[in-house]
Image 1 (cartoon, rainbow, N blue to C red):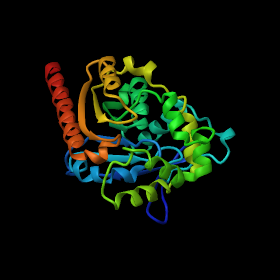
Image 2: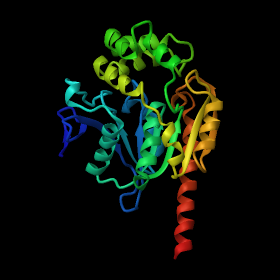
Image 3: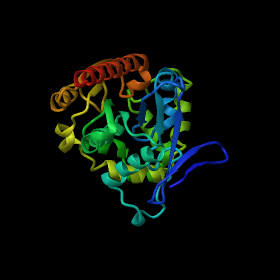
Image 4: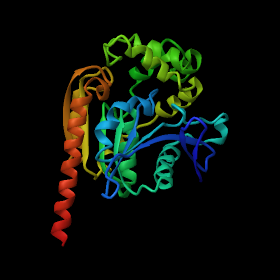
Length: 295
């Protein structure tokens, strides 16, 4: 399938399913040097633009791909779900197709919140495409109380997205204590404006998919180097659960990130970035040592 750039400069991958995925590629590495690729996969309701502040830090050393999930940001969503299979196979298949079309063999997969759930399953099922896995504020599944919270008094979470719209749903979420990661009064208007880029129907369809997504059966199958960035004060992710996750994923490293809220990639960005880059350096060093042992 062909790559595409629209009149406004947005770049897309077109999938055999008929859907298209928006992505942003940033690469400020030395062009004569070999470089590795980081794939950033955002959490629910967010999209590639939310990771803008990570790009200057990462893209001097790595090629960085930020990718909008199905129904998020500028990625499409099916107008008729009867013609689209919202399954793990479909969603992961589109990640694979994105990498294939961009000629990327392997990535350091960085997934935030529910984007990390995809990363866990992807790493278990496609280890040959993953150099390392980093999950940030990532649950292994969404428990009933989370689904009830996200419904905001409507029938269910998808219904809330449809009835409130993307911006209305985000406004309801923002009124929950501890959900907005930045105290700057200018942040919330920007946050709501960015959430509103997505269509409420697109978010609703993806919420239906996430409501039954469960990474737990795959965790013991993960054999790639794994970093777990855990918030200490998130309403959605408990430290005890992240400790269990670290025990379950063989050889994984757990880093507790102090600070309020769930979105530590924003509120504690520098701490998360330092831990992430240190982890990547360790992975690279270990790979070099293994290669030298085989020479």
